[in-house]
Length: 471
Image (cartoon, rainbow, N blue to C red; front, side):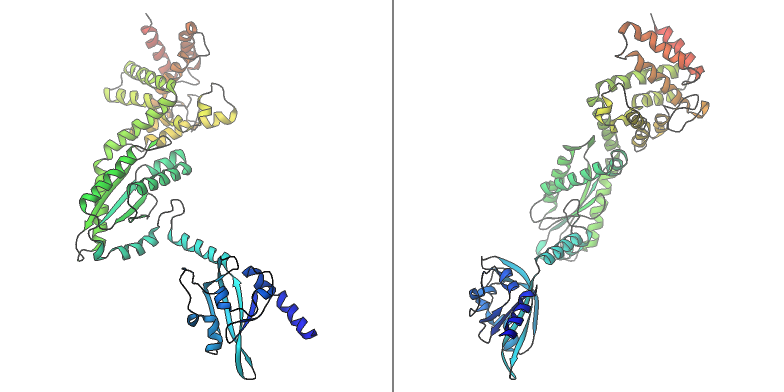
């Protein structure tokens, strides 16, 4: 009895579940962990019961598990141990859990009399394995297939029964600009928005994969060229009607269709990519203009006084350029730079933009707007040549300006002109001054800043120009 009690104590101290069966499969003993994992309150619930019928009767897919296929029973039917970690055991409440078990023959007097089974609940391990499989196959940001998983899907989809098979390549426009100007959080939002658009435009049987930072590939089985074109049209339309931050979503899309088994899938992919790049090239100029217009429109819609300031500064710049006898081309460039000099303010927090007085931290953030403006304008062919002037329009003649601390004629001429025009306009419409005092205050501000903040020669010419315009 003492030996039996010691054995019982050892069994019940084990974290691993253990039970024994006779040659009919009936339970002969079970430990505490076994009862707990299976949800039984007392060993009498299992003793003498057929364990296969109790806990191993059904496969993970819900189909019946024939006893002749049971690896637990194989220990005494075949006389050798068995191991499994791809099956489930069933609890008393009717729920199942993934299990890893080992079954060993129990031998007495040289004869197999049953088996001893040890098992563990491996739910957490299976969950981790599923997470790893997901990470290996799916893009974490969008939940779409990644390139690795796409290669497997393409091998399965490239089959005669899926012909005609259309392949669509989609590239998000302006992702780099979004990351550079608005930050990667907004860039990630743009990617997720694009993936949502593709899901909405496609059908349940289609495969969508994110195969690069801004590139997606879609497999469209049993899809003719006409049907693929309809999907492309839906994608384009949904992108055109969607905004992320100040960015109007846009994508370049192309596709190709495989009609016969003899056609190479790789060639179809290349044709689809070529079609996408043609779309990008053809629409580049209009897309550029549209994007720049959208950015400006967003700034002016959010902050109407910036629209007035931009238009007035552009005209003052053009007038001052004419007074300085610049060429027509330079004056056109100057007017455009004056109109766009504060475009970088779109990136600033709205809480800062609606204030007239700023903390030191807020002032430091505001001083970044020429850099943001430079980055934006550098992305467009039509504004690349004015980006440098916008970048330097807050430099000061005495070298105490920002962002680079340029001094005197180190500052580009057009930047010096913008500095005077925009400062004059800002004071001229300042809400902190009585309306009758603003014109005089604006001239005085330029006069006081000549030689320190502003180029003294240009400041003098500007004041003469303003005086001549006063009736």
